[in-house]
Length: 532
Image (cartoon, rainbow, N blue to C red; front, top):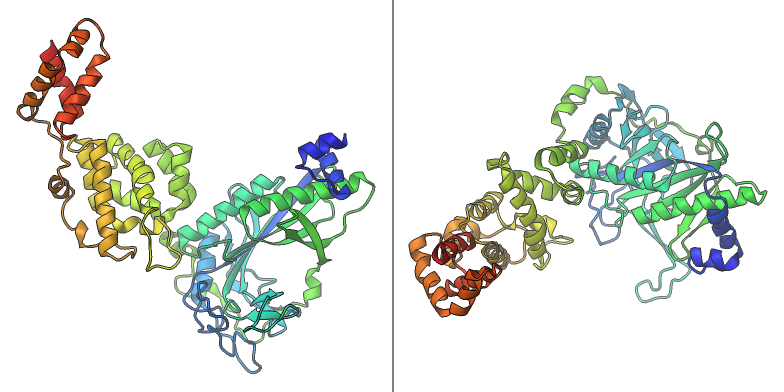
């Protein structure tokens, strides 16, 4: 039995893990897991939530974007960021939630070094959004608060001095607008939890509410997990904090389900507590007992005015609904229905609003032409993105290939597709044309994300300049075809004797004779005519 468990669980030898793996194999599906998520996402605004300090997640210099307000100095007064409030209302509208008419902010009292005031400004009784659903998961509430500062522990050096026992605090993040979304406890497996988090990330990006980059800590997931024998009862929950990747979310939830199940099978009880996730050991660990809301001693912040949202221009549901872009799940359905995209193709476009918007712009002139649309999908995903990944983007911090997709203007890319569809350039010629445009544009723009003046000419003129236009006129091709037939009498005889495959060799020779400029379809037709 031990050998079977060890083989299934990756060589785990510790007794605790063996119990968990034993449960995974022998007692699987005995308990019903129940999962609720709390997801924090930093919002993309020019300034912080309650002061005018710059909101810049890419700022590398510590304690740069700070002021007395976000440092919590006595006597300072917070001022609401209405842009952040509107972004939360947009999220709430998109998920079909109820927008609050009355709302207020509260002080959430607890001490930690990254909370300089000794409390966090959050929302308790009157959140901005109540209800709604996303990806089939019901939402309890969405509220708006301020983010904490960042603590760094166990530094190896501080300005050249040993500081292993010190912790440093960076207040650049302190006071950044932070949206918190809480789901209802209706999730029953790790995979659904991850799908929900991914769908929320997409929504935030489509709305321009935030990048929700988990590696940068711009979106953080906390999972409340319990197991019970029946769906009618809930077990004792644990909260796993600050999960910073989708893979970690899935692993932590799966581990905690098995840990709790193994405890119950062993006759022990599950302790209500907050736990962390150890990426190296791939297990959760106890941090502290789980707090309840009364532990935070919430009370309305006396320095922040209460809001009647219906009295604020532009904050009503109708106005916000009309301002929303096409939402990711709507775009997903449209792409699959109108353009017959595969699951893999639609996933790439939907996961990147930048690529999706570029695609929409390219096909605008021929969106009803299935052949050209399919060519556009193939050339963007395979050829164009492949070229962009090879371009060094020196002048733009953190830029990726998708950020550089504007290297070729959408209208120009559409012209290239027209040339391909009309047979004016071959597949090989189209690849060469894209390479010329990307390489030239990147060189002249010195590695920035925008194209250069090299793309001001038409696609046809650039293709003609580089000899990439196919020859389709019979008068241009017949001399080369007649010479191929004359020089390859043996192959011609084999073809006429019934070896049909020989025609491919003759086509290849004709293409070679025209230096690749011959239209393969026209070349084949003329050859067949000449061979009778």
